[in-house]
Length: 484
Image (cartoon, rainbow, N blue to C red; front, side, top):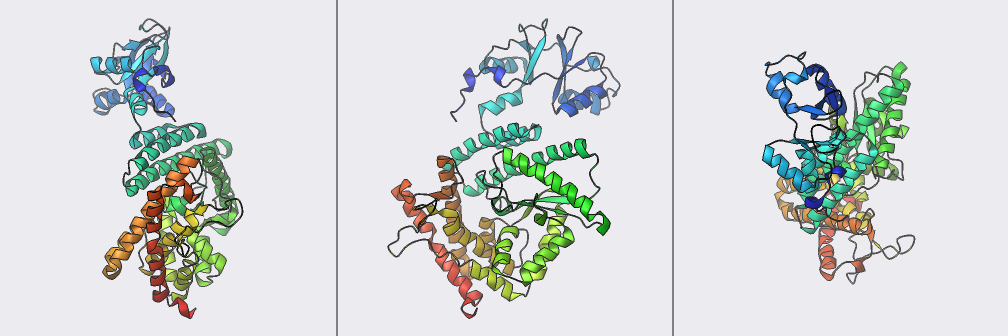
């Protein structure tokens, strides 16, 4: 996407449809309209739809909330006037100059640019900020105002422009992950809110049941930079047996709407159906606890796989205490159960350091990705899996991010501090390289040809593999894997 030359940008492309009321409208009704339309201002018009004033959030704060005027006051008594109007064909540079000249935050566009013609739009200082630069805080405010999946997708695509810029400028990967996590969380939250509203229209009132949406995988670990496939689950509070089927049906229907909307935003469906729309992963708190206990006490290969996916969850929306209750259950159930931790540790060894004897990259031997390097499976997951089992052994809930897990372990085990710090640095580098490849190739960034990297890039990646073998040796000794 080419950068926007905002000085020459025509305001019509960012102008919003005006929300209006008449001079006879009460402050109460005007505020309700503003809330329903999710806007910070409303244009006051006469019978010919000519602008005569403007009412903003600031007017409400300064004149109504203070008690100076009552809610039944006519808007004509507190609106700002006269309205500064402009012609729709002025440039953004002209718009900014108008705002600076008059010290205002909103401009009204009319058919001929004068207050004696019909209102056609409104532009705010916030709208200027949106096109002048990619500011994460602006993205989040925009997301909260989106009303459909198309708009959500557009904001997320713009966020990827900023992501690329930060990656190329070598901004701290931890900062980038924090930024993209906030944006992703806001997008998921808004998608859920839109789907809840749709459910209310179609099915009426929602059941009076607390629930939470759980992000799994890379989003659960706060490491999802690209729009990869979805991994999510849903937990709802325990209800009487007679109500379980009805409550679960509601949440499955809601979850299907949410996953469909997220797919529209560019997050692919999970190929393994690890999504809240799957009845297996939409459960009550008690059922989730039982499920986790079954995996822990019967650590088969498949159950260990499920643990690796589901134990990195993070509650994003709803009653987060439900997620915290699940975390306590996981740590309580696994405490002292060394065989389970040993099985997790053994699984973390399934991928050795991805270099051949001659220090070449271990690439795929066949299939769709023949001769490509799997940076996720061969390099990132061995580190993430090791961090997960070590944090479980350390009995430290609440830390899902791989960098932060290694940071915590470095403080807890001074004797292994250097290794954990190297592992954290290696993981950050791998996250950066995967994101860069994904943006370059317009995919998840998981597979790429090592020959596509520069000589320095290949050297940096090789160096990032070094802690994998050392970590795996630590796991072998600590969990006595030679005895299993």
